[in-house]
Image 1 (tube, rainbow, N blue to C red):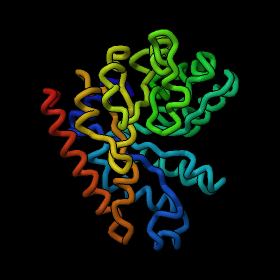
Image 2 (image 1 turned 90 degrees about the horizontal axis):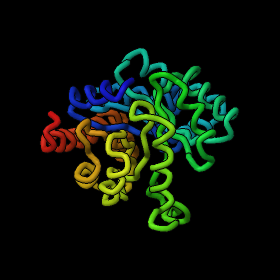
Image 3 (image 1 turned 135 degrees about the vertical axis):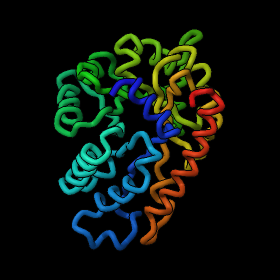
Image 4 (image 1 turned 90 degrees about the vertical axis):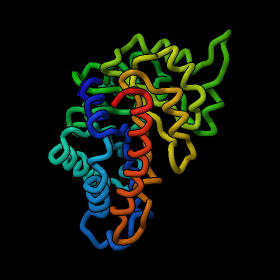
Length: 275
């Protein structure tokens, strides 16, 4: 999927919403535990209820890997379901991989050849050779961790060398490895005020922005500081949508929550003259 394809989907759906499938076996409605594959049963209903207002889905692999083979099977079924039923959807493996070159090549093969994800999140701190294997795949994307919103981000990401912070160095250096057609960046929504400065470094790249909703990030501030002339944003909401309800109508509640976010996004796109 190209950036233009992604932008066309954003305009068509009037949304830049990414739904995070952080599907926790301990949080899904109890009645689903009686099904043969509770995680997939939950994901399928969430997807069917929200696909028309979402441009992307982002399974967080930890929730699947923690269940061993059964979890991997649920993940693969989820990706296959999206591919077959909603082929316009951008599918992100939230895997946060990154290792020496030959190992990264195997990770890339797993996510792009076998699982058919469109993108994978990658940690940049082992340098270029740990990222390059992911960038060799045509029409696939690396989403590089740039500025995260967790408390520990301050331990390293803000370290100053001269007049440059470490995360700024990561942005500048890594942008040489790929292009605006295969490289995105993760920037936490709770750091929205810093998006304007980040846009000075990478004005044309798409950004994946988690932290809106349950984590308290402001969608308006993200759009104000981070939107470019192709929107350039995929804003993720996980818990605020998928756990909006815990009864048999959980999918309907998820849809209501997703539509609420989409309506806000539509207005922001209009304000930026992108619709």
